[in-house]
Length: 210
Image 1: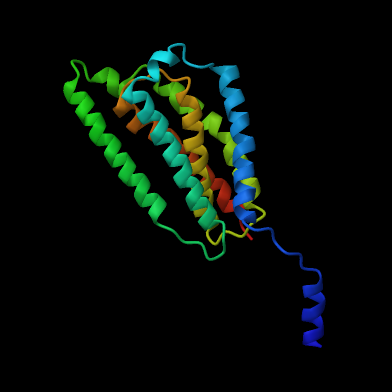
Image 2: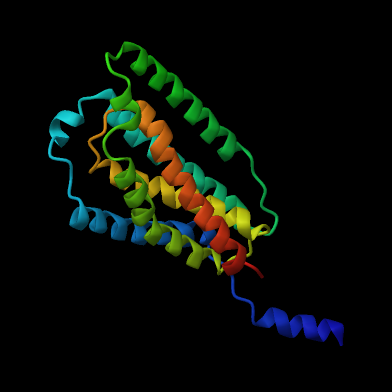
């Protein structure tokens, strides 16, 4: 009788496409990322000095740091979406990246005549508003994808999705942001990304339980 039951259950199973998990999350990231870009263009527009900005180290540091955090969040999310998922290397790498950025920021400050504009800038509230705002489509897309999976730790999976979303939102925001301080990037961009991670933690705790 048990063999019969197993046989009947197995008859309804359908093969899973190769890399189905990756396809699901990447699809959600792509679609929601497009929404974030369109939102940025509608609300903020590209920075007017983009042609000059792309010749500076600060611009590419901002570009690379935010994109790297988004990809590290994605890597963690892919692992944590599984029931047996555990990982440390994305978090350790992210801490290492922040450490390297802080070193660059200190070097920049040491060479500056006036440090405060490089630390405080002129758009802290703007960054802390728009980074989470532009991240929300990505976060909701990722959480919807994760609901179809089985994360072992819903809160941690939500945090990883939040870091992925926050990094993506910060990367999109960087195209509109004219701040030139690396310490501004290290402090306020990172805070904005972590804020989205905490939102993901709270939502994941409730939305990803199984």
